[in-house]
Image (cartoon, rainbow, N blue to C red; front, side, top):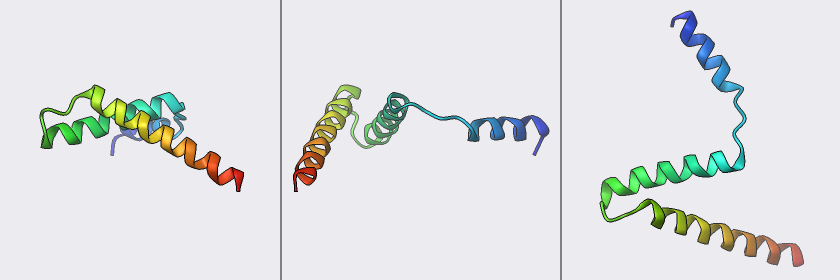
Length: 67
């Protein structure tokens, strides 16, 4: 491995992504993989599904905290 590549890897290991960046990366990954299987899948559909799951998780956490 070259020194330049080693330096880039070391730098990348220290990157701390924001929640927004993690969400965008997740949406991109999901869209890319689902679109391969079904070309009718859109980025908007993936974003809507992600939002729905986030709301369900938030609701579930609130119910759990009440117990």
